[in-house]
Image 1 (cartoon, rainbow, N blue to C red):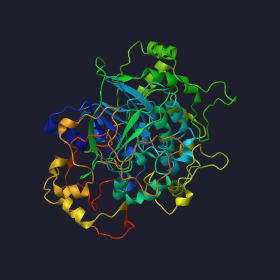
Image 2 (cartoon, rainbow, N blue to C red):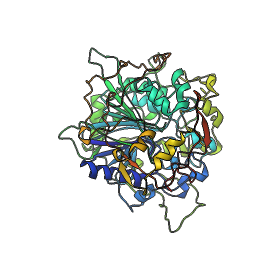
Image 3 (spheres, rainbow, N blue to C red):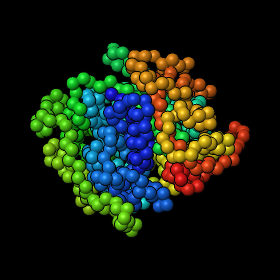
Image 4 (spheres, helix red, strand yellow):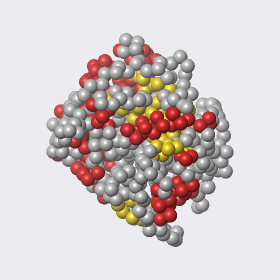
Length: 570
């Protein structure tokens, strides 16, 4: 089946679906599934925007509300994970996943589902060491601290995912697994994002928890976003149990903006005879049942049970008996019920309510799933907590401390060596800060040439953008549409640099001279003709710069469309 992968959505559903439709018509293909890798922004109304960690002037309604209200329906089944710019009060209603609109499914804090026999998993949020060992204590209305901590991943969800034993086909995270940049064209990455060099060379860019999961799950495909750059890699894992070593193909994509590589189609082998409906995964549901009593809505640190003589149980993997129990709970039907319902009023453009307060409610989908499988609705648990962490404010880090990626408590350090205090002079790319985003100043010629000859805001395939755009986009030349099929996992990459195995906490040290890497096709991804949206707005020139040190300019939250932004769609 053909799977469309999208980077940071930023609420631009109309544009994403238009791009898919254009690609289908132009290349005579049919997309079966859309995967969005975070920053989805499922904003239902004005109140939801106040629960999204972005500056107030960049809180725009975008187009999700049309799909939530029923004005439109997603033309292709869409599965997404959360990032670090979300309507958190909405997503918290669905801790185990669920429909946010007809045909649009959220995977929850962590989740695994099946579609056409393909197992698709994901982990929502981004890694921050000072919140990693806490529970999901946040509850709206959020304090300034909780507004940020609510989208930080927790070790309880990683622990659940590490109980998975059966093969995973596709896995999604918003931020990158730490160290994955060693397995692709590192030099090209640093040409596009010069400010990442210090973190890349020091081995601190990305999520150590995701790297741990990558080593454990070893999925066939791993898709990410967050850093707003297209990057492909291929990693060969160490062989286990005398079996052939597995290979993971990694792909990160950009945000949905003009002249950006935000969408790519890959072909994933489905399993003939499998259901055409989105299905629950019995192993994952059995793990949820087994770990239900481990969940606490507390901001106190929690350590997963280990085989150290202090815990009566530390193995929560799903037995065949446990999976059969899940099947019995579901009456033998794994199809996820299409039981979406509105939980708060949808935005009405004819009657705007700019002063609306954030709404929060119990979601019937979560209630039904919890009743069926005897699970605890941790969202209700957090709301009932007498500590009221989210309202009074947790003892979380300040925005400055987040930039330095503090390891949190000295008495109980993070299980990952993530202290990057020595890098305080460098912007921390693991999280785009709430107030600002650092971006490199691109050459003036690049900015001007990209806008030449563009008269309408139409979707065009990359191959038609012309030589002007090729200067801005350093990705390889696109292959014809009949080469959408990816090479099988056993295919060795045609790379100058050999594949290396990534252990979760012992990454290979950066070489003195970074590897030249290989082209995207050599890393295992044959590119589709990724559609790009062109802007009719004349691009203002940017100051060019010379020398080895990249020139940096600071501008407010450039991941959102702004009038002064060169990427504005007018």
